[in-house]
Length: 307
Image (tube, rainbow, N blue to C red):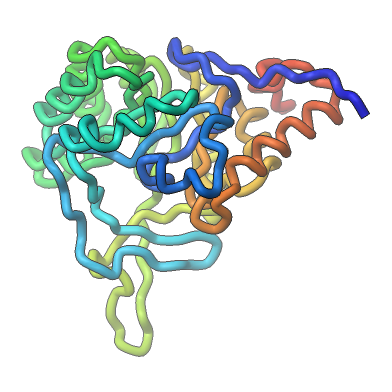
């Protein structure tokens, strides 16, 4: 049966995506790793794993533990560093049509600024996603993203250091995520992605020791989806900039829930470990939903929750 094509294109922070399917940083490597399983050219955007000013070896093993409804990770932001990324990882990515967004982090504001400046103007980069869930070493390890004043400062300095569209990834480990969202919007964020992982832990009852070498880690997967969905809905009601939903999206129905709640796009994360083709399955499922419901443009579905 011939079907009329549906429009899946979305504008996020000045970035024109062919569809709303993005990969979540830290779950898709630098993109090339998934080339045997996924048609990379069909994705809306690839968000590569976070890069820092200098290479980082991360935490010692064990660094990943499966848990009920998800997984805990304490990778420790292992990465090759921004210079190595630009020299050895980015060239491959420039050969595909999908937009590339680089997730960045730092242990202090100056490192955030310096990484952003190195990426500014680099060929093949469509935008930056700012991970503000990292510890500020000058504040005793407190994450930038849990304090609205610290959040404003780091977003403000990055905004003034790059012309690239700026997406800020928010931490759920806060009392009021809308307060953080409004703060970073005022600082110049072009879009928000939420949520990052929730802090959790697991214990081996036989040895009475933590199952992660780092003791605690970031919980992701279906277990956090209801929290992520609620936060996307809350934030979408108080900011003017686009919101990107992430957290436990395993199926097309999961993705559609986020879009109906107000997300303009979604990121697929933990699902990539379970099913390397999850992004493709979710994309096909969204197309099928739009066809079945007579919806010609996905933008008309965003924020249509009836309450």
